[in-house]
Length: 420
Image (cartoon, rainbow, N blue to C red; front, side, top):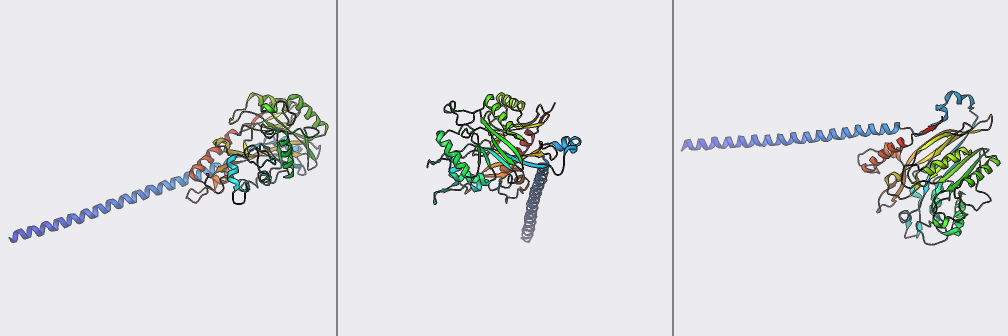
């Protein structure tokens, strides 16, 4: 009996010991698992931060300089450059479109009004130092009370003007969406919004001469994109070699110091420059044009530098992409502000291409439920300030798209120098 009680007590102590031991073993294993998980998570976060820092450093190191006469021809150029030379700055943006989605985003139902300011507020300081900022205006502005993709409220034009754009071409396939009377009214409204307007045929000639810092800059604008109703019209400037030659000669006779042509051409949503673009560029360079700015493809296309018969550098941007649009194509969201610096010699008064660079921008779509759905943002500035800790305005998905877009633009805009 006593032996049985001793056996019971011994077995109880063994069970208690085993139970206690198992408890501590289990706790130990759990703690080890937790520590390992914390370690793995910390390592992943650390690795992600290191990778993010490396990625952002690579982005910062990307050069937006496409061309610099000084750096490429340093010895020869320094002989001719004086600190007193005059610098003229031009900027160019792409197609300016006011879509139905953008109209919905800007509409204030309570006040029955439109406000597009937020779309451009992040980029307004990118072009305000330039003397001329040009773009292709694909929106129309008429008294028609119905607003859609064919007719935008004047508030849209005001927002574009406030962002820094001050010269627009209306030579495009949407110029006559509201007929010739609509084009006339659109031009009048744009001029009232303080734009200089080119591309129509309502003036005495097709050539606009702008005086900038004592120099005459000639601006010509044409479209190659026609609808059936535009084929027989003289209301807009439709490209032909005959007309272009006549206009270029007029600019020279008017003592223009520099001739810029804005071309609406090419195939939409492609990076490929077509044969028509190449042929027209050849013709314009051969006939004395100094600068060619292209639009319509909605995607940034290659840029190149040619030399004309006088040995002068001619810069060609086949497409500068879009400026304002709601296109869902990712490449169409990747845009740029092209900056062109001209130098006028105090010695002989000649103007030469001095430098070209760009600022990459992106049309951010925050979603239909957002208060401000569409916003233009500085791609490089936004990407390099991204923290990845949940406090950023953009998501990781958007950040990745910005990085991919920056790399794509940097690669695509490696300028092709045809200076043989």
